[in-house]
Image (cartoon, rainbow, N blue to C red):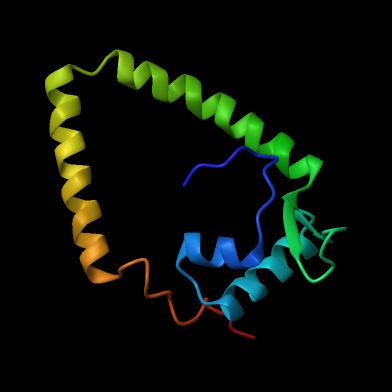
Length: 117
């Protein structure tokens, strides 16, 4: 699911979207926060609710990447025949279906790979 870069997101929503357990998502969020990529804040209406937002530096890096990638992707799309795009779309749909059958979104991954000491 695509979201605007400034759209708030809860840890539980992120966990569901990326297919990880809440515990593994917490580890990931701790690392992202320590690296300066996200901030966590409590909502004023419900102090129990935590909201995740990208930091300004993370937004800037994402915009820079999207800008460069967007131009390159647009050029590839412009120079690819409709027939070739149809073949690619069919292939990607088959791969997506196979991935869904292997790990449905309702079954989050058990753990996040941990770094070895």
